[in-house]
Length: 476
Image 1: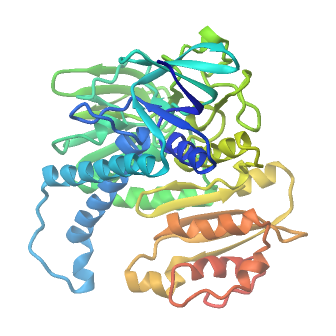
Image 2 (image 1 turned 30 degrees about the horizontal axis):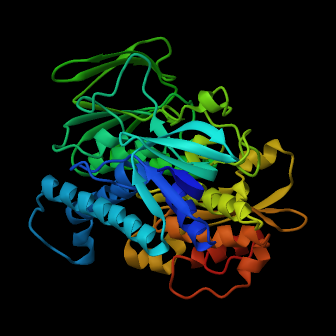
């Protein structure tokens, strides 16, 4: 017997499981189909984010930060202890526990909201009677639904001719599962994932070298923020080379050799030998196995599912969200799209404003931004004013011993509307939300400057940056 639903969601990552729950809240009969497996072969909803991405990486970043603080920073606070030792197995076990708790939490939410969960891989089979029929493997179960949301996420992009073996050449999944600290770690790609994973293993004792193809470091961020970040990471011991062109990667039994050229050396070839090599050169949409061609679902030249501004595909009743469509590959962007699509299906006015989706790098110092950079504003010919405030002048940051970085705010010269906020420093992954709220309501820098912030808090740096737009900071 084929089960019928109002909505079928393919994928239980951040976008998929949130869409399924919101659909159930709105009274739809919902099924969510997901193929992720735990170590024991059971279901592991949560997608890349929960299983081999956001959640385990943040667990290891937190643990490794504690270790680094014990080694280098606690004495400054008067906390004296013998040389700390590292139990990597226990650290990895804690990470796995955090992942499992998130998996189980999603399954609990499905039960609470009466979302039917099916463990397996779904593909399109046919359309009949205004419904889409999906086949689930390996069970052979079939389901039908009037609406389908594809939320299958993305996969790590491999270097041409260099496959991930997760032993010497690692994707994000392999890099999070190492059972020993590699003495020499190479990372190809100094973007968000490369920096976060490189930071974890540097703190734990690896000699880390990052090779970045772009000539500018962290080119997606504001130039001033990127310069401050490069200075901080270099001081920490991360070796970062820019403008790199990879000539050859040779994987041996005991090591990996990378031959490359960089901007500093011109045509002179360099060599990097490392015990492990993390390849972090982007991600590709995960559409394999959907049988998109069978039903005529349109893909673009990058393999993304083609959608309009409402995440509707070229086929009636089929929608797509998250990493599998255009826009930034961010878990919270997928969540917003999932909610918006389901609300449209239910006859409401769901909407996603891509311009106010924040970006975060969870290194130490953290980096976060929302809106436009100075370079983008200059390129658009838009007149703006800029104000910044350093954490070195923030009382809470000084008390915590975390004074690296600053907050910068950009506002329109005429209207004072906030156009972009860029931060590097302690806790900015949390502070950026204030900027997102302000920009979502088209606030001015004067609005934030006039709002009382508790003292002493890191958030005062946001207010001071707003004051700085009008050249009237109070604590600098």
